[in-house]
Image 1: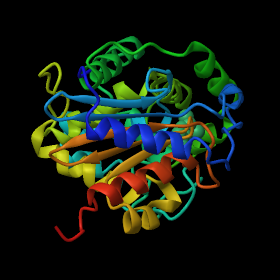
Image 2: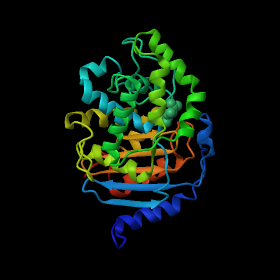
Image 3: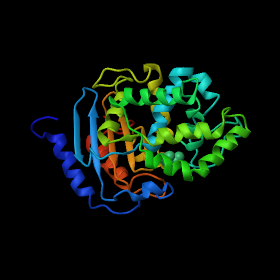
Length: 311
Ligand code: GLN
């Protein structure tokens, strides 16, 4: 951190103070453990591609990454197998449906996109490794390249989700039925539940976003996490599908590629510039953090960040 607060620190502190009073939404409860989160938690972190980090509020509070992991695992699948092969497993079409919708693109017999659960479960099957332990190791190594440190698994959330994730089981069995996944559903789901249960704080998440913004190289460690050629693919899918059935309105109003998770986090990427992470557990009907959406809107407006805005 810098010694004296500059204009960005002051902007974030002011934004944080104002939006702390925003109520509405509630922590997700369908994964019972997530329902225990303190609704008052609110952290913001901005990681620049030069390695500078700005924070406000509970930026050091850890939470499970949940669906935000989907963007990184999708990038891994692209790096490992290439675009064409990955497209055989998962499409790039927005759904307009909720994240846990039990549906496939029947025309292609594949999940619509990698940001909804069906697509993410299909993508989890593409994680490198000859056996479950090797695949867990590949997942851990991937996330470490993005975050710049090894991420711990939240065992309690992992077991909570594994015990109750029957809707995701339905999706996985449906995909086994259509030949979209080949391995035993329970094994693919186990890896998916693990990837969702990795612990990050807003600073980690912002750094992970800055890594994408920085053409795939972690600005703090210099490690490459994503091939440069696949950065536009990941950002495009985040832009179109990262906010579920709010993706269109998000793109219209905020205009930055983003990904949300039911733990109450939102990651935004400003291509070439920064990653922004906002964490606040109360989520709205679409599964997006209420304070997160509000803060993202104010940040995008204040700095003129809409990618299609006039400059
Ligand atoms: N692990 C969660 C699930 O599969 C992830 C969903 C989310 O963050 N939107 O239901």
